[in-house]
Length: 247
Image (cartoon, rainbow, N blue to C red; front, side, top):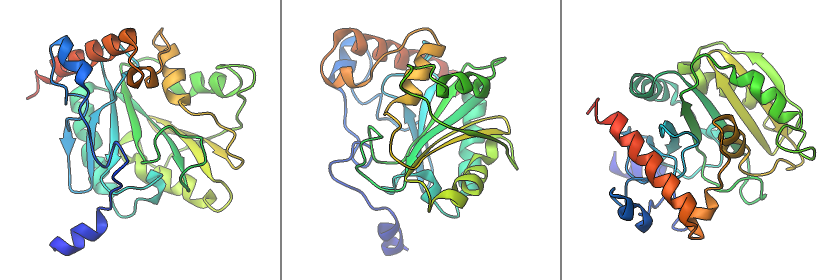
């Protein structure tokens, strides 16, 4: 069993999700430098951790990440029940949420910031139509040069069956596209297939930052920007205060 598990979980030494690292700036705001790397939930094949720069003040922006180094969640097989269990737990912790993934079928085509698959779980969306919002986003809402074709599907399952819907929709098109943007709220699914690698990185971060009133670039944290570091630390601290009611 040990050898089988070792074979399944493949890691890359230069990947920040394979080998989580602490962020020293966090300790200056009263939280552990490993707070952004700590696992909120862990299962056999996945872990959930805070996004390094949550898009909302409440900090309810988490990442669902497979332990194996893959470039899209559409490549994950036979884990639907495991993902469903994780999402059920997350709904209990942060309430209703939408799921986003910018996935790729190959590494290094410059359309993603980190080539280790991860889904964004973003809460505090009660009463808002995120699919309708992203219709505007993908029709040039970020800027006039970013217009991406998309399709909207009625999922076979609700948000807890996200992975089943993802596999069913994206899996049918994986031979004709190199990457995709997938969004789901309730049982409505939106997909933009990017066959030419034209989609810019951080579409989710930029769009949802604007949705909540402030667009911030997480890469500025790495470059030492005091403001982005302060906002990240404050929002992650707010998330941990929220979670403290449940643990």
